[in-house]
Structures are given as C-alpha cells and as structure tokens.
Image 1 (cartoon, rainbow, N blue to C red):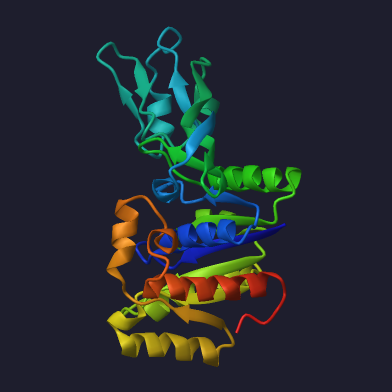
Image 2 (tube, helix red, strand yellow):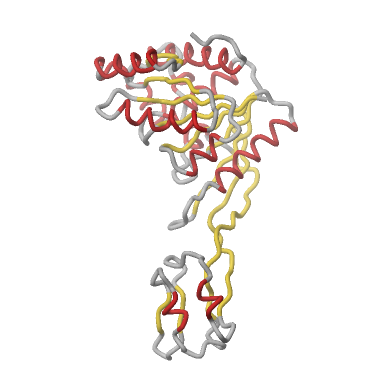
Length: 300
C-alpha cells in the first residue's frame, strides 16, 4: 500500500483539482484506492467526489477551563494568573472563562484555592467515512474558531490507511493542506510520495521551496507539477529550471483550461468531465509519472 499526498506552498494553486483527477484516473485504471481529505480547515475534496456519508464521529479538541459558579468565591486569583485575558468578572462578583479565549493552559486550575475550576475537553469538529465514485473517502470538518493542531489530520489519514490495509487497497491519495504548518507535517507523515502543485507566479519558486524543504526534512520523496503554466511562460521556465538544477523530478506542465472551472461547477474531475481537453491529457501523463515514481521506476 502506497500513500501519495498532494501539497502546495499556498492555497489556490489547484491542488484539489489535481487530487480529484488522480482519484478518477486511479479508478479508471482499476486501482483500488482510498481517498483522504486532510485539508480539514477548508475541506472541499468532497465537492468534486460527491460522497455518500456512511459514518460520522465526534472529534474532541483541547481542554478549556470551566468555572463552577457555586464554588467560586470571587477571589479573582484565576483572573490575575490568566495570561490570555480569558477570565472576566460577572455582576455577582464571581468569574467566568471565555471558551474561545481560553488556551487550555490550566494555570487557573492549579491556582484556585477552592477547587472551583476544572478542565473539560471541547467538541472541536467531526470526521466522516463516506463512499465516493472512486472509492472510500475519509474527511473532516472543524467547528468555527477551533484550531487545527494536526491531530485531526492524523486521525483522517490513520483511518484511510487502516481501511486500505484491511481491504488490501493499493493506494491512498491524500488531498493535503496548503503551506508548511503542523497540518502539512501530519499529512506528509508516513507518505511514500508527495506531489507538489506549483504555479508560475512572482512568488511561485518561494512557495514551492517552502513545501519542498518540509518534505525533504521528513524524508518524503517529492515531485513537482506546474499548474496554469502557460499563463506566465517565463515563470514556468524558471520553476522547471530550478527543479532541474536541484535534482527535483518535474512531472509536467498543466495548461490553463476553462474546462477545469466548468468541471468543478458540475462536481466532476476534469479528466472525467472533459477527457480529451489539453489539461486532462497533461494530467493523464503526470499521473503515469506519479505511478512510475511510487513503484520505484524513473518518472521522467
């Protein structure tokens, strides 16, 4: 079983469109695949896959302080020790903790002389198992104002990996989060291959370098796929030259193609919606190189 994660140095590069196309091409080629949407802050893989939800589970996040009004004497010690201004005084002289401002440090709990404060886990979101046209999909949603520490990403990936092992499925395709933070590290952990979607913009090389440095640090082999390459040909040439100079496998240029937007509007991967379009042909070639790389062959 091989894990392929699709990443980008920033949002909006077309990462999910590429992941959806790869999911379709894998199924078209007869590969039994498990899919995972690890971008839990802005999950949209399902918008293209139209999954049928089979299971829903709660995800409990960090702890927050709860002040018992019957035990609170109004001494104010909790207010004084809180570094996050999360504790405020009520009209009756007792105190309350703001669940959004509370950072869960528990300093107030340890300092309260009357045991009036306790820490409780909070519901941070939900994770789901669904069935899509191209195989099982694991995805999640964070509740508003909840932070993504990477734990939910890890959970989604673990569930996908376990199902792939149980059902002897060959590939797990992970639509990863953008950037280089904790969610990206969690999405990349244990991956056999990362496909980094870049774009030819003024900051294109910088964005690509950031995520390449992350995957290199964690020992994940990486390929670069350039999206909307014909919008700025000089920038595209610069990125391809950079990859060549640094020994990074460059697996193709995707042209700007309005059928991608049309396909997303209709909730379809572009390779299914318009299989003969220029971008679909380029994606098909790139997917062949991804398969070659994940199997240990030369993807070039």
